[in-house]
Structures are given as C-alpha cells and as structure tokens.
Image (tube, rainbow, N blue to C red; front, top):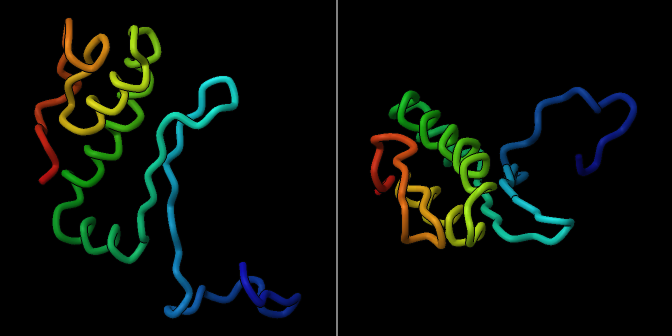
Length: 104
C-alpha cells in the first residue's frame, strides 16, 4: 500500500487511491490472458446485481479449468470468458459453461 507506516497500516485505503483486481492466466510462466478491474466499478456492479456479477467471476475460474484440456488454449479461454462457450480452437466442439451469454 502506498504511504503506509507502522501506525497507519490498518487504515482504510483512501478513496483517491485506485484499487485494481487483476485476473491473469499464465502458461509455463508466459502470460496468455489478462484483465484488470477497478474495485469501485466492481462494487457498483455487485450492488446492482450480485448474483450475476459473481456468476461472471465464477465463469473465469471455470473457463480456465475447461480450456486447459482443449487445443488452442488461449482461443478457447478467451471465447469461454467472453460468451461462456468453451471450444477447441475457440470455435469447434463447444461446451456451454453457463447460460449467462455475453455480459453486455
């Protein structure tokens, strides 16, 4: 945390300080997929529709597990995160991970 001292380490993070959550997937130490989320935006989405927000986050966990055994891992992962369809090479032999569709 920025500007933390021994007496301030447990204080809340100031509103002026950005807090970011990163979702990153690496294969053999090489990054193949990365997303960043602003915590303030996530908080609004969670307040608006907590079940949907958490389901989309769960999709990210399910997608990487399912894509691991697919040819074209990166394409399979990207597609699965985008629309919930995990497919060989991102386009063949698809399996629906959920019924959420595109998050838009």
